[in-house]
Structure formats: structure tokens, C-alpha cells
Image (cartoon, rainbow, N blue to C red; front, side, top):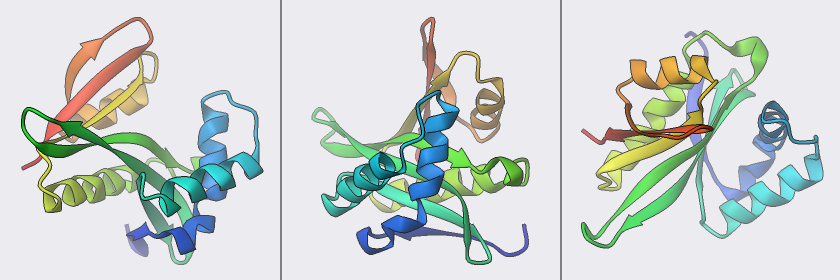
Amino acid sequence: MTGLTVKRITGSEAELVFELFDKYRIFYKQASDINLAESFIKERLNNNESVIYVAFIGSKPVGFTQLYPKYSSMRAVKNWILNDLYVDEVHRKRGIAGRLIQAAMDFAKDNNARFVQLETQTDNYTAQKLYESVGFIQQQLDTEFIVYRKTVD
């Protein structure tokens, strides 16, 4: 997509994702609360508890993904959970989510992870199709969520 860029943001850039994070929470049937979105994102970034990539069209943020570390003592590595992925509704179906996932996978590879893991609701067929199309493999299924994993190449 022309004009699309994806970049990792820092704590000083947290405001770029507040509105998108609030919309993400609304998508999952949570009440809108921009103050909660702001404090949650600031805390994650300022405490180095997550990594956030934001997709931009021009200078406008249109999507994001947030990764959390997952440690493996046996393998002595840090892997990553792609916990949040959201693209603003008016910008969907343009490859933005795929670009955000690729940025997450590149980050994981650069940080010597073995895999990236994510989960989605069993009725979120659009997300399932996307994840499977970019190589995520179903690992576990329960009545509410499907867990996917992709090995870092």
C-alpha cells in the first residue's frame, strides 16, 4: 500500500496509539475509556513491558500491534505474544494487519525468539483467516479462543 509505514513507538510517542487502543477495547465489547487507554499504554511502554508497532498512512495512525514477552526456561529464550492487533475499520482489507504482523515477526527474529504466539476468539473468522494465511498454526482450541503459533524463520 502506497504511503503506508510501520514503526515501533517509544514511551514518548504513546499518544499515537491511545485512540486506536480504545477502539480495540470497544471491538471486544469493553466500554470506551480513553483515560484508561492512555494510562495502560503509557505504563506498558514506560515500564518496558510491551513493544508496540503502529501503522501510519501518511502521518495518521491507522493500526497497531502490541507484543508481550513470554519466557521459556527450558529453551532459555524470550518469545513473544502478539496480544493486540487492530486496524481502524475504515482502513481494513488493505494489507495493514499483515504488515503489522510482519513487523512483529521481524522484531521477534531480531531478538532471537523461537516463536510468536497469539490467540483469537473462535467466532473471529476474519482474524483466523488472516493468521492462517501468514503461516500461524493452530495449537489449541477451547470453547472461546484459538491459540496460534508461528515459528520465527
